[in-house]
Image 1 (cartoon, rainbow, N blue to C red):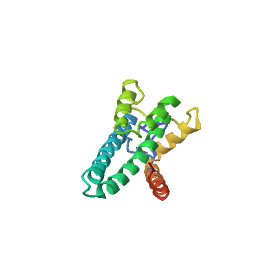
Image 2 (image 1 turned 180 degrees about the vertical axis):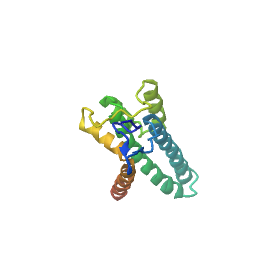
Image 3 (image 1 turned 120 degrees about the vertical axis):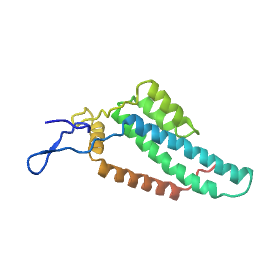
Image 4 (image 1 turned 90 degrees about the vertical axis):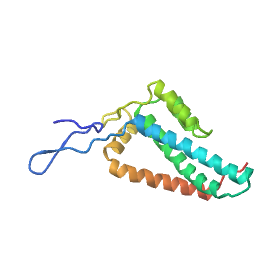
Length: 173
């Protein structure tokens, strides 16, 4: 049997006795994490721009509404990706907590991504396999092997968590 680029996966037999390969998973933990860290920082910048328009120039609050929602959605997505990548890459708890906390101050996700990359915490390959030592790593392996189901599940999770955040309301200060 030949292996594919999915963690713990092998090529499956196709009808007619030949081997059918799944399309390889081309997004590395490093690329996925970097993309979400960057998107989180960009939406922070847009939200800050919206706040300037609302509170400094007193011209419109549309920027806060639109960019605030966009930032909230990306914030939740970043946190979910940080957990998945952290479990897969076997981060220590303090690194996972630092990744999550870095989403709170503006632009800190970019700092954390560079910090993690310099320390080898963001690999090019997914580490979780079906025989990983922990259930959470085996769960990440399942998500990676079934990404056509996992991505919509992630979108539903982000949508649901965004709905909860909207129902609770903005932070009071």
